[in-house]
Image (cartoon, rainbow, N blue to C red; front, side):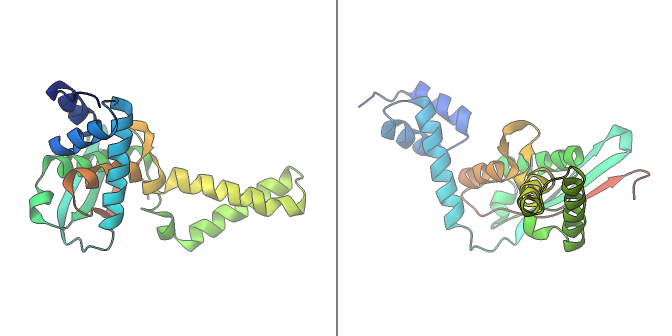
Length: 199
């Protein structure tokens, strides 16, 4: 069993944002291996997020981001369970970063369930026309459309998008990290993006 020093705990804390006791436990469970400890904490965070999925989120914050000298602006509403967490730095920073991310990526919806049917149908028609244009056999077209819709979700649904400040994780991963840090269920309620001259 590896000796767990305060320096190791501090380093893991800085890397993961988890609490002191969680970092100690992770390092002890992973024999002092920093990378394994980070994975351990991430898995634990996901388990925490899953456990809290049924909780009500009636507190929260509205944050905004203004860009291009006032030509582009975003407002987001992010909810949590308690007023205490709504005031924490990690929660507010998440909401602010989310607003900046929405400004940069212009998502169509929060999750794939929220994509309007008309938008989905239009995309499918375009993909079908493209596949027919390239002479793909009829029996392959549905598979092609399925693959392209999956890519569409990844690029256009907020929770599926790669986070602009850390493309190795999705917004959903980032949300789960904040859930692990705060110990509360957090939901992205809504967002609005405004751009001067855009419909």
